Length: 289
Image (cartoon, rainbow, N blue to C red; front, side, top):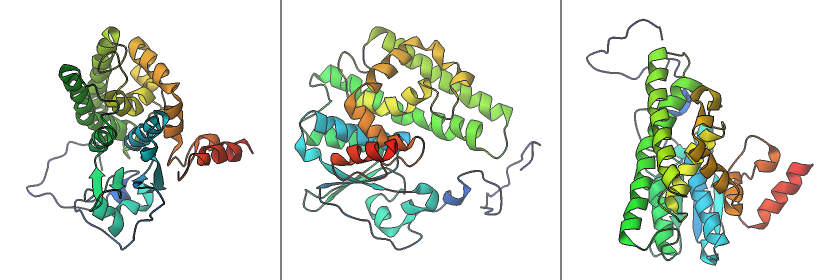
């Protein structure tokens, strides 16, 4: 890779010998399984296969919020999928998510079993399964919630695959790419800040799946936890985003959800797999040692 202008060839070909950066070994232009590996199954009807990236945190926070709200049927097993090791290309995982991305959910309470992939789809599925939990009942408010949920699904690739890649992970830094995606991420933060200046939560006066979807990405960014880019993006200037971020961070279910399938950072914040509520106590005890 050079800093000289690049002229695309007439037909692109995959050069596996190029330095593709930190995630080069797991990126490829074809889909499907690379190896045979069955997925583990626990005792609960809901089986989650994930990692504590922002997209994974959305689902574990949702499940913990459902349990906090008294939905005992939301008990789940959370199995670690190590994307750096290529677990997402195992045959069992590909059966649940043919797109080979975390998170993926298997609901074994249905006949046949129901697979759900894409984090936004999982949030909607769980909300509807448990009596429209964290979904407004008023049609206009529900539409607002849906709009912000899908705003996140469309915006995060600019934050993750765009800004995050070129700012934090690319093997070489290029001013044009970083400037292009920085501008878009700051525009997104401004969109959220203006919205939160007029509304306590993203979709209105109630906490919804829109907040659960957006917080792991933009809340983490606001606190400088995502790519350690807080100073670079001047995230402190978005005071309403920061107010909302701090408010949600104090929710007990959010604190627990952030831990699940996390295998980095402070040991007290890690819970590689979750099979029972008591696992959080065990993680806290282990982290204190």
